[in-house]
Image 1 (cartoon, rainbow, N blue to C red):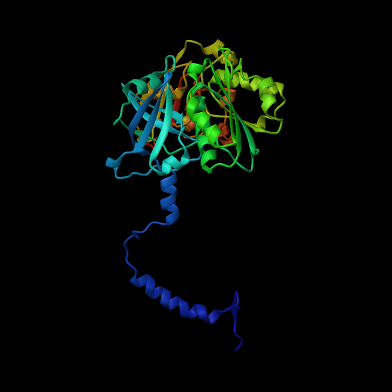
Image 2 (image 1 turned 90 degrees about the vertical axis):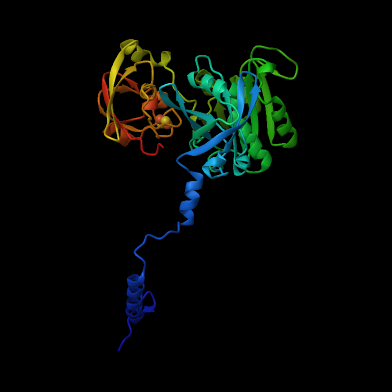
Length: 400
Ligand code: FES
């Protein structure tokens, strides 16, 4: 009789396999297997829903504090998720009745994370509700829940040039400090020319550390720019188009981290140079503040307060007031609703919620929703402002 083959295997072999497989299945335990796949274990280590940390050191800087966070040993782990230089963590805070989050760029090196340690800089901002709270209440031993490292302000070898121009303002130095450490340690492979703007020499953060990194590694070049002081050894003025063109050519990738005001300024300067937008990366700066750019929205809604109906995924309905000059997320947090959020600037999608009724305004600079989401009515409450009474459904899944 002619033998039949399937993928070069005689078909009769399969007939022998079937009874033996049946026997294995019949004798198998009905209990769910206790092992976990290595890929799952690794994914959980890299992207934990929450990480429990404790403040292990606090250093006073000029107008800011440097916090060292270690994995909380009482939670049974001494490990923290690895990250890529440029990423941030989001802190979960309970201040009075408000439950909120704040993103902070990691300024430590990725290798430090493998030793169970992160570092962040918290600058006390004028009227900074959370920053003031952190800088006065966080001491050695304070326990905090934080997110996994997140964000896209990272060097991508396939996209970015070998030489990168960094532009930092004030505490916007944090991700660049992490980049510089990673370059010096060999976990990032690019050349960094950093234009660091401060008002005075005294206000420069991590001056000695940046000098030490520059001396240790020939691929790091730091240029300090002082706006309010003329001093030998420093550039004077602002980080202008002329200064950028002095240190770069039109092909270099440009990374920018600072305040919303600084981004507006740098956008104009880089436009003067004709730098293609795709070469410039702005770090997520947290909460969006309405400016003249949003004049049309403000003209119709300024000083108005609308009613926000919120249905959470546990089926509870809340009614909260929402002011027109604040993102919807802030109204949720003030009402003590634990709404999901991380970047607070429209980038991560973590706060994505369903707009059931009503209208919202999303500033153009924070509009990063997928086309599908816009069509079917999903919003990012972190950068959506109410234009009427609204009803939204929020998904608190993923929050502890
Ligand atoms: S918190 Fe990231 S998009 Fe809203």
